[in-house]
Every structure is written in structure tokens, then in C-alpha cells.
Length: 571
Image (cartoon, rainbow, N blue to C red; front, side, top):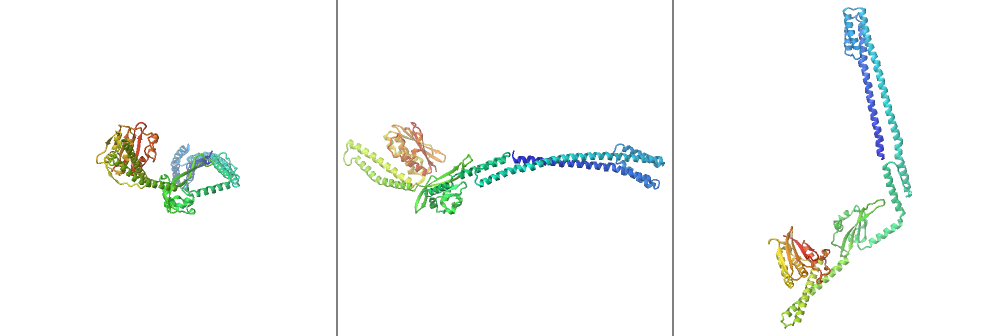
């Protein structure tokens, strides 16, 4: 049972008994008061009235008028104070005898009057004795109940006085002794209380504390300090910036790399909240914006007189403490991975691709022009083998030209130098231009392209006309390449909410669902397909559409054909 419950029961019972004792005492005191008042009012007054009438009777012979008046006055008062059995009859006899005496006074009639007064006094005296006996009994009852309840209250107080301090003091003494043992590094000390739940909880908490202290003491403190130094040295020599925050966002750790790129002083920020530091530091403020949802884009930070690039990662720290079962969050680590060398290599690769593509485009165009001139036979007739050879050269030249164009577009995408001319464009004109660009390619496989425009003539989109046509060309080119002879390709334009959707549907082999996300990655080609492309077209298309605040996707299943679509906001 809890100590609180014991105290409530003991003190509560004592309180109830004291209240009951007070009530009983008040009741009996009021009863004694009532009995006393009855004696004084009912009997003592009658005795006084009778005594006054006897005195008046003695004076009748000397001063008859005044004596009769006093007698009658007291007689009237007596008639109003008839409270005892027989007192009324005695008073009536007194009146009769007194009136008879006044008419014809004689000693015999006076004697009768005196006897009536004695009888009235005798009745009231006996009543006084009886009521006194009742008052005595009431007093005895009051004494009995007051003494009984007082004894019970005394016993309860006695029990509380000797048991309660012992119940509280003994565990406290034991706990004090155990604390002294712990202070003397005797971490094997344990306490075990019996009885109250509060002290059992206290014992459990104390034992867990002792267990943790024992665990800490049993570990090699010097080894811990050495491990801490080793970890600090390792973190400080990392090329990645590391900032440690506790559960309340106070900075408890920051390595040299993080200090260098943030231009902060370690002594000035350790122990402060990251929000305080962010007030005067732009980089920390930028990191805080993405602390819950780290940005996928790299951070560009100027340090050591050059631009450095970092990927932000937030690592939450959760541990299970000794004596507990559930994991507890104790903070997080902000990690900035230095990807500058990779970015530099990527920039070099992009510049190389852009340069090579630009340099190749001119001679390839010249080769194609020469092939076209030879095909016109201005320089002489060609035999069949030469015609076939020229056709093959022309196709390979066109393929090389397409590849260099895609590589140039890719270099623009990677360098962020895409130039968009955003304007209101007609979806119908985009579709017609794209279809016209692939007409010859479609005729070679006898493929028909049908259009379904579910929009009005006045509907416009906000887009770059040339880039959007390029995407449509890519969709149509892929559809023709993966369709069989004599098939149909359907181009549909729909209005969906705030977007206009362009979709191209073919009846080819389709794409397995597991490759749907990858088809828009650079250089990816679906396994098993005839590999005659670069794998860049869809990646470039995705970037072109997303730069125009649009969406791109694919719906396809094996042997069910494919539908590639993109959506752009309408004007």
C-alpha cells in the first residue's frame, strides 16, 4: 500500500473521530443546557411564586389591600407556569380557597390555602429532583462517549506517532546509508524496500543508477579518453565537414573542415544552439533550411579561393540507454561530403564532350554534304555498289550528327547553360512540326502517325517551342524505331487540369515496369533492345521538360506497346 494511502486512511479516520467527538459533545452540552433551563423556568419560578404568596398571606391581616394585590399577582404568574402533573389541580384549589377566604376569613380557610401552596411547592421540588437525576444521567452519557471517542483518537494518534515515522524514516535511513556507500565508490550496493510502492519505485531508480555507475566505473576511463581523442582526431582530419547537435540543437562538436568553410571559431560556438549561430552565419542558416529534408542539390561554398561543392546529409543518433528498452533520440550529425574533385572531373568531362561534339559537328556536316553531292551524280555516274556505299555513309553520318547534337545538348544540361525561350506556343503546331520532322523515317517502315487533339484552337502552353519539338521528335523517333512494319503511332493531346498532356503511343514490344524509372537516366538502354542509340535522348527530354516546370513519364508493359508522355502548363 502506498504511504499516501496509509496517511489518508489514518489521518482521515482520526479527523472523522474528532469531528464525531465534537458533534457528540455539542449535543450533550445542549441537552444539559436544556435540562437546566427547564428546572429554572418551570420549577424554580413556581417555588418563587408560591413563596411570595405565603408572604402576602402573612401580611393580609396588617395591610390587606397590598397583600391581596401581591397574592393575586403571583397567583396569575403561577397559573401561567403550570408544567408538572397535579400542579394545575393544586393551583385551582388554591384559587377557590383564596376567594372563599376573602369572602369570610377564618383560620381554617387560611390553613387550606397554606396547604395548597405547600402542595404546589412539593410538586415542583420533586420535579427538580427528577430533572436533576436526568441531567446527571445525560452528563454521565456525555462523559462516556467523549472518553470513549477520545480514547480511540488517542490510540490512532499513538499508532500513527510510532508507526508512521518508522515507516518513512527507516527507508530514508537505508537510502542514506546506500548513498554514502555509492559516494565511497561501492557501486555493488543495492536497496530493497518492502511495503510502500513509492519506496519500491525509489529503490528501482536507485538500483538502476548504481548499475549505470558500476558499468561506468568498470569501464577503463583512460581507454575511454583515448578512444575519445582518437575519434576527435579522426573527425578533425576528415575532408568532410562534421557538425554535431544534441537533442536540443546545441552544438557539441564541430571539426576543422566545418570551421574552415563556415569561418567560425570553435570556442565561440560550442555550447550554443545552432539557431543562435545561424543568425550571423549564412552557411549555417542555409543548412538549417534543409535540416529536416536535406536538399538533393549540391551546396556551392567558396573556400581557399576556389569554389567547393558539398552534399548535405543529416544522420540522426538514437541509442538504447542502460536499464531501458526503447531507443531514445539524443541528437543528429550534419555531414557535408566534399565532392569537389568529382565535380571538377564532371566539369572537365562536360567541357570535353562539348568541345569534341562542337569540333566533330562541322566535319560531319561537310561529309554529309559531300555524300549528297556524290548522290546527285554531278561528278559522274555511280554503279549500284557505289550507290549502296554512299547510302551507308549518309546513314552513318546522320547518326554521328545526331549523336553530336545529343552530346551538345547534354553538355548544356550538365553545365546548366540551357537557354530557354519561354512563350505561348500552340500545341497543334508543336505536334505538326514534330511529325513533319520524322515523316521520311516513318515512310521507310510504312508507319502511319495519327493525331487526336482534344483541345480548342485557342489553347496555348507556356514553353520553349524548339525544345518541346525536340522532345516530341525524340518520342516519335523512338516510337518509329521500336514499332514493326505497317504499324500505327498515335499522338494524343489532352487537357488535364492546369496542364496540357502530349502522349505518343506505339505498338512495339513495350518496356518491363522495373525499367520505367531508369529509362530517363543518362546512357541507360533497356536490356535486350537493339543498341543503336546513345541512351541520352530521354534523359535530355526529361531535363528539358522539368526546366519548363512540366512532368514526364511512361506507361508500358511487355508486349503491350508503350506510351511516353509529358505535360506542360497551359497559358
